Image 1 (cartoon, rainbow over the protein chains, first blue to last red):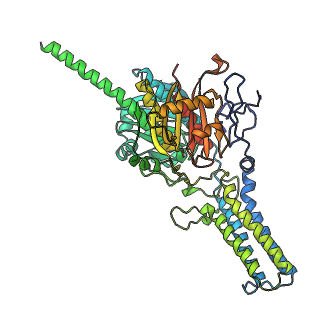
Image 2: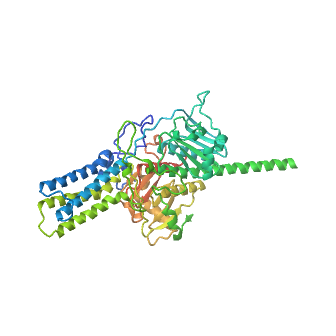
Length: 304
Length: 283
């Protein structure tokens, strides 16, 4: 059996989040190599090979971005130098074939320079996450069945591992179902700030979201005056996503980076919201039906 | 229970496969590129180069491939010029032409290099595999909760990533959805058995770490995948507490196939891991 080195995916380590995982073997961002297992019936198939170019480009991101500019600029100078050395006047007409090939080469050089400038312009700004100030909490509505709780905990675990989400609050049917993560400290004691579900649902932020039925992404929370409606989030929360759960609830996600939620994160959060809405609706309807049947039962008992 | 969709339904759901910007209509959020510029904070002085981003405004045209087309076009013009040059070709002209051809070759590789830069978004090149039909089969003897979980997981994976075909094996239950090439003799009803036999042969159920093939590979298990598959990701479902059992309890795997190369970015893989965690048994 071939014993290979196991290179695992590093479970996403986002810079600035304490404590950072211990440095492991070098991280190759483009693929994962699996080693064969030392036991009978292990996976003996092929493993993906190293992708040299992808690794090299990812590692030298800045240098590669400016590479076309240097190449284009150098070629430009080379063409002019060539003309000068060969004793031809630097006239930009297309009369001789020499001029024509010069022009074509110049065109290519300019294309490279522009491509390099475009690459530089789309370099993502490196934004440092801001550690939210508050107290860790995990408050879950006590009457929920096991399956609903585990689904909610799965959602929280996925969101906190994959995105920059650091606080999660779910309100459903004007009740606070969940408050997990970092919450603002309340004034009197060091306890987490309790969520006033009714007030939240009446506020303009939530009303707008529920009316439109679409997710709302406040990418830079400091710019929004509606910030005051979310007092339970840490004061230095950078970004917030408000995800409606059907038309009965809302999920508030607080992130620690400005514009920290990417487009794909938003899409995933929408789907997770729909799933949670389906689960909670089913449970709440069961409770409603149970209460109604209880009321009817008591009525018939008294009515006799 | 086997649920199969007819051909008439196939195009609609899968055309809405994950499309990178522009975003799908119901979600109201800003496209990522609207405000990215090279102007940074106080610590670094840099030019604001965002004015140079332009677009020809033709929908469906990917401007990042422009250097490649210019490379081909100008390169062929240089060669044409060389061949049609009536008089003898001077050394100076030869030098220019060599430089021009090498620049053209470099321009042609630019989009390929650009794909690996941070912040590069892949154009939606998902094509549907030819000759494949859309199927949705699930094992029988599966609890309602598990059925719902499998159905939701496959649905979300097909919608949110550039996956064309998904296969999940979780706690002995098999769920296959998307575009698959069933061999000629196999009808939709026998599909489940055919898949089950093939998977046992591949030994994928004993995988411990995730496998990602960003490009076409010569793997045995690719024979069950639809034609036109370019990248494959296999994510095993591992027991959350590896310390209890030194090998870790392997409960199955999630196999995703896409017709695009380099289909799954880091973020995609992280989300796929999160979805596969949902399918684990809750002990």
